[in-house]
Image (cartoon, rainbow, N blue to C red; front, side):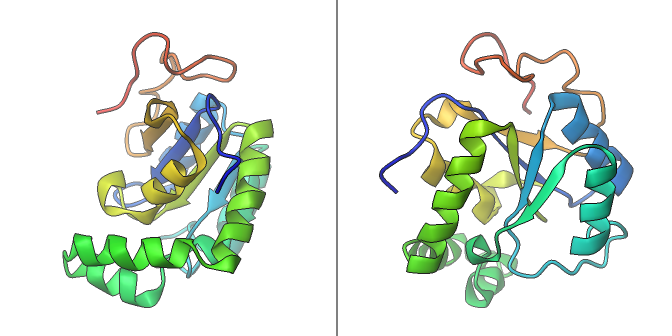
Length: 176
């Protein structure tokens, strides 16, 4: 992608290890206005995290839900990640990310993220083993402007310097 961002914070979050109430409270605390679901499969065994239920809950909180299936990890990538073969997972996902469909979805995402505080969502708690981190880096030239949220401790970001309108490169962050 040629028209990458340079200063807008891109948030990421996984819902592993949390519940819908704590997850949503985390998004609200940092001022997220758009949650972009980058899962290929939006059905979840965790209550509240399947597409329709999640969308309704977020809309009740004033957060827009967008699903960009084209940015989901293909099945072979998900299988490699589940098996702990992270180099293979990254290779599969990076090959997918250059597809025409994924590039079109990245362009849509980039346009949205430039206008509103946006958070990328997938399942894994640890962003290092999730494709949402690869998507975030594809959007932003400055890795310091990517802020990984953890939805299992609501309130941890209330006083952080990442709230809407603040340059994340100034001051300290609240990441682990």
